[in-house]
Image 1 (tube, protein in one colour):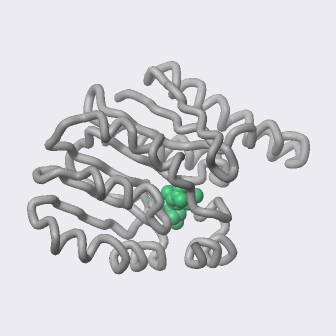
Image 2: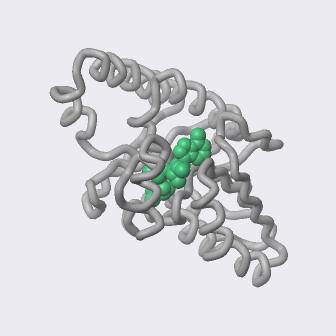
Length: 205
Ligand SMILES: C[S@@+](CC[C@H](N)C(=O)[O-])C[C@H]1O[C@@H](n2cnc3c(N)ncnc32)[C@H](O)[C@@H]1O
């Protein structure tokens, strides 16, 4: 928790939230993976201190392959030390690879059955948001699931206080989301028991 709050103040733009996601949101984010039988290829983008990662590690089976992409060195070191090192030792037949780089530059091979994305899109310019979604969709198998989250009502609360440029950014972000959800059968789960309440949003490849 403290590691996360510290990064919020030093890397506000990329961290994007003051608190890590709670257990109920993590459950909603990982539900599509839990429903599928393996072997599965899973990608997590923007794990932070590992709110979703620890749930994913619990449901991996022998033969599964799990890639994690995190831009922030401090978060990557924390994940490696806290979860990944011991997990690899205990589970030699599950592949877990941590890539410390931005997802938009990551040279990851192959496609994934599930992508769990914890990126703070509201902090990103619309052009970067579009670039990252394009990259993630290109990494998804046909019929695969891409899950990301958004705080409930954030855009409605932000609109009156962000000025003309900010409202234009919100409008462009909303337009990107609309197209994505139309093209990729968007669905959403509302999670009230999170601070703040959030939606887990699911797209199909
Ligand atoms: C809002 S935090 C979410 C952390 C965690 N998934 C959670 O929900 O508690 C966003 C995370 O995305 C990472 N991040 C931001 N931009 C990124 C990028 N372009 N590529 C990979 N990771 C990124 C940040 O460093 C941070 O760990």
